[in-house]
Image 1 (cartoon, rainbow, N blue to C red):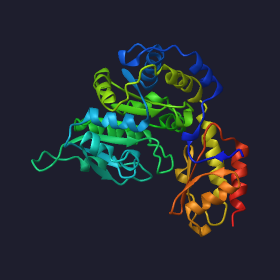
Image 2 (cartoon, rainbow, N blue to C red):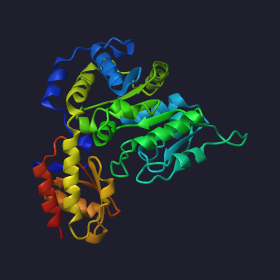
Image 3 (cartoon, rainbow, N blue to C red):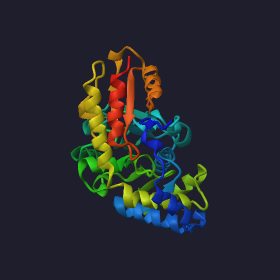
Image 4 (cartoon, helix red, strand yellow):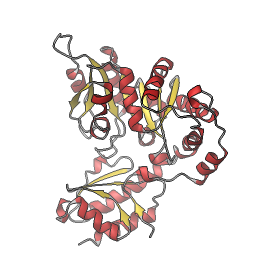
Length: 342
């Protein structure tokens, strides 16, 4: 049975162009810096995001952890939004790997107020850890794919520079943010000292993410990548798909956003389902199904029987994510299937 898979944009499969590129990829040993496909991908990524250098990593989580390790020393403190990916879905890595502690700030739809960030920066006191990093997530997964406005990005960066603190951006879906803001991605990236973005998810590459920053930062980060087992050899087979992702997939994301908006509108008109439409900005739709008198797990099981896959747990919150392999007719079929639930 063919399922309409709305669990995440991580389920995307590589396109035919990507498969062809993988087959024909020119490769070498990347740990020696000799893989031409990796080198091309990293050069392309750095240029697109307006940074000096880039580094291919196995995943977004690995990229985030490497960046935290590179920016900090054990015993430091970093500032994060309380529901961000780094603190929620990365297995406590910042404590185990980087040895830092988290200062959490409650954001509005995942967006921290720059004044709250500044208030959280530690003063110089023998009892306190040093604030050494500010982390942003753009788009914000758990908030429903929300985008940080450009003025907030600018103000946050100004606060960071005032206190001589670097900014790291978890930009797993930064190209979705750029699409929503109608800005070149480098205009977003300029308000961060390091950025991680995923080649998978909405860009459809099978594996990998990229970290960008200054030449000095990336040189230091490569040692941490090696430490974490991320120094791959003939990784150009993976980079080949990433190159296609950057060349072909970054400019089509608005289609996914339109499908998410269509889905949100249709679901919001169904009695028992509540959606904060202000958060429907990119390709993620968060629903409160408490009015349907079932848990997310029960909701997901019922939809699965109708050929639609979503994730649901014990709460009454359900997430839908649109992507390249979801078309308008899939959205319409999903809305009709939810209407028929009993």
